[in-house]
Length: 124
View 1 (cartoon, helix red, strand yellow):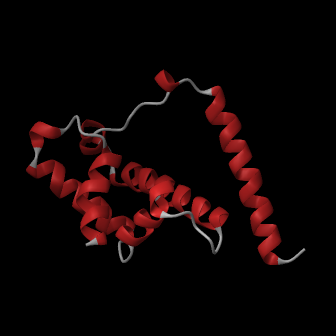
View 2 (spheres, one colour):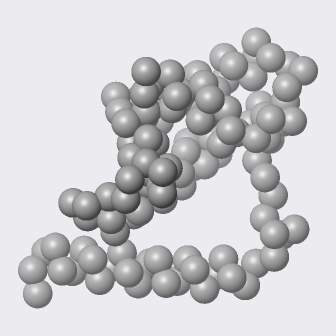
């Protein structure tokens, strides 16, 4: 089995496992991480959250292969382009600075803040 086929098999198994686990969880059981959570979290917890997002993007990108869907059908091409050149530390720093500068907006979800404050400016 080639490396590429093994990788696809692992991705498929991981995706199926994630889908099964996700299907077992109710929406109420999965909290939406907001700025309140972010500012109270340790650097290690923040990094773990960002690693989870990065891994999700990597799995989806690998699954799509060389023919990703058009922008109108997927966020992945825009996420990849907008996050190009960013590191876990640079995204974490930008989130820290944004929430510090906007203490009245701590209810804003972290993924929304990443999209509007990191991804979209990275696309332009």
